[in-house]
Image (cartoon, rainbow, N blue to C red; front, top):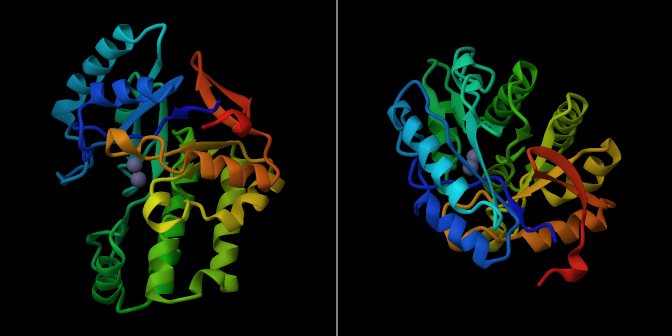
Length: 283
Ligand SMILES: [Zn+2]
Ligand SMILES: [Zn+2]
């Protein structure tokens, strides 16, 4: 029944509940597989990433829950790892050495002309301020850098799932209406998705914003293109609250089916399998 989610955040990063609460909620919703993907540590502290001194606790708490739920819910542990720079990215040895079931590669951060790290994963209002302050109002430069960084992350590798591709699209559209329909923007997204698929990454359909904004990352208009590419897609809710683990899942599955997909990728028994979409049976 495609009741799975592999992208979620708990109290080890910026999630709003402990690991156990997510597992309990997943069971109550009938989920068959559930994965934790805390924001991996960066070389500096932030309000939203895990610190290295919490990593052992994260992995130990996961192991305890995995044993506790054995036979009732498949639990998996991963990390959502940022491409920051050539030192800090999913392929870095310190992330590869961790005993994880999977890794999500994501871009949340940009760099301004002074080389300062700039958060780009913001509300539309703060995103607009960021573009003004750090890119002199040049949205195209910010967007191009976002995709350049994500491309570099694909080249470096070390992860399984491309997290929320083109997450910048909602904010870009708010900043400059219709920009995401312009040729340069569309070709950036298409090239990036094609490169990701050709390199063998699973492509996440991130449903986090569906409830509030009615958008997916990547956007629904790219679903037919993903199907043409032969992409293997994973529907993830990127939940920070237990009650949101199921948000947008059914709508994403429906949209994928309309775009021609018959299967989605799900991790079961430690293997990514192509599982038929069975939305007729979904509540
Ligand atoms: Zn993310
Ligand atoms: Zn996330």
